[in-house]
Image (cartoon, rainbow, N blue to C red; front, side, top):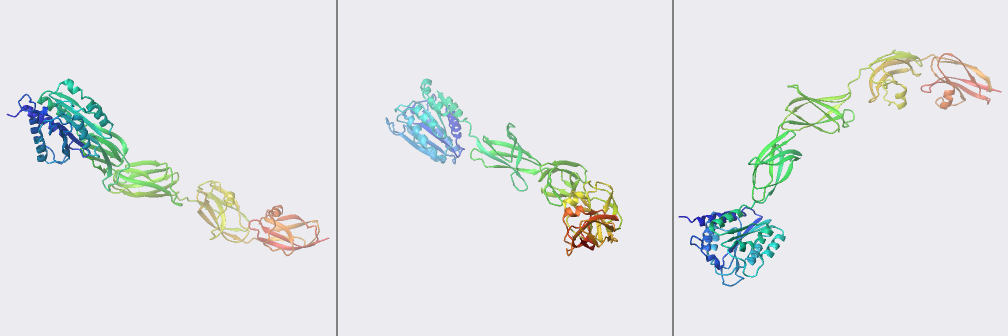
Length: 562
């Protein structure tokens, strides 16, 4: 019949040693009491050392031999020698045979230098260990002058998470309590056991030390190209349904998770994904959640059709051609705006006041196109009603219908000319909306056209041909006058301009000052006007110039006498 004490102790050892076997950064060292008192009998007639050997033998056969473990023992070689401490199994992976054989060779006979033995166990820990467990199994107190409490304080001050557990068996409770400083300072546990069953229970409880949480990186990636999404809503739950994280974060998050199985449910604009994953005892590899497209994505940008400049405040309408469902949005900031739509064929319309534009696109789950839509003002239809022939300098009427703005302007230009308009011309020739206005024909005969300009972009919206015929220009005046006397000048031809007296030989295009032009202006109507002869006698010229282009219309000599 199987010994129940043996079974309990075996279970305890197995559980305790499995606590730390799975972490590559965690080490476990058993400090094993092989002092002479281990020959003491338990209630079933077997010695403590015999039961321990059997337990370790079964443990060696069942454990994962790739998991590092170490054993330090004391009192196994020499009687009365406090230096009888040996690392019988260095920390590392060991075969079942090596581990079992090592324990079987232990022969209790010496003292109990448990403090120095625990110190030696500490020295066996790899420098790379992030956490460690030292499990002291003893049936007696320190009897070599060591201070286990001081050693525990050293453990607590070191940079790794080192837990020291004390399991005393076949000891008085008061005696075991003197070792409570060890687990109290290191976060370990203290047990007093008086039988094999209690010892097994204690070791089982030591095995219940919680495993270390692992750093786990989760990435929500576009299943089409593997790129990490910019943002997502995360729901991460353990396999028992308990929520461990929930919230809106970036497409990459880092969580501290205990080893186990989990499920991540993730959503992002136009995407959804779900994946189960396992957090191992050791290093946790990154977890990628493949996000499948659930909606088509379009990126829309509006630009001025004339300048190419990006427009702000554009109102967008996406109309599904088949279902006639529509999505509307406004892009206040300019640049590209994201639009999420059910897959299908769409007509995309953008508008900014009177400026509009449209295009058609097939929205799919495979691609996220960037679409530039050019916006332009609708064509303006303006009608001009005016004569086709006028006399130079004559006044004629022009009627405007369909004006786009009161500040649009109407100019007369040579047929085929491309001269740019000046700010003065635009302001001085505003149409003021629909209606009829008087205009004056140029003084120079030829072929012209009336041009209606839109003030919003200085483009020509309407044209009307205009032929300017020569006028019958007439100027009559005396050829001789007395200095500083008034004389009469008679003009005809209907062209407004100015009549001036200049010195003989002055070139026709050598125009007098603006002041003289204004002071000597004529309105073009036939009639008689008065001029005053110069104060200095001599030969002069009397000239009649057009007011619009300063062209010389008529001249005659004028002699000024005393």
